Amino acid sequence: MWKLLLLAGAGGFVGTCCRFLVNRLFLVIWNAPFPIATFTINVVGCFIFGVLSGILGRNDIIPAQFNALLLVGFCGGFTTFSTFSNEALNLGINGDTLISFFYIAGSVIVGLFAVWFGLAITR
Image 1 (cartoon, rainbow, N blue to C red):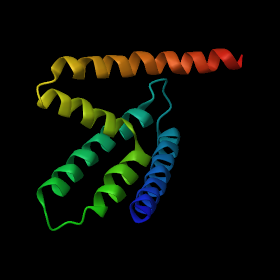
Image 2: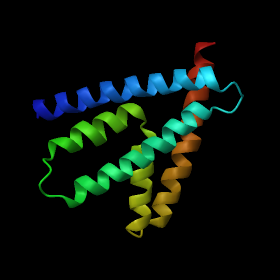
Image 3: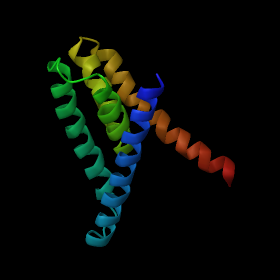
């Protein structure tokens, strides 16, 4: 358990550092109201999650610790949107389309409300 926790933490540290650097890079090269850095990070993070998930899921020779390091750790630190997207997609693939829809809509709507509420109570 501790080994997996440390691996996830190490991957998360690297993912978070990468997110910070990519965000800074976009602040230098892109000055527009659209949050292109976050959008790019989320899309790239989802792609990386998909590739790694596919590789880790089909190769029995790769130790399970790589899941903690790369998927939970790195991708989770780079963007939690990748995990959200994977879960929503898996619900749809498994035939739980309605649950997937409510998960997506609920996450976005409740997430926006939670941010608004958090800001509101601090003003």
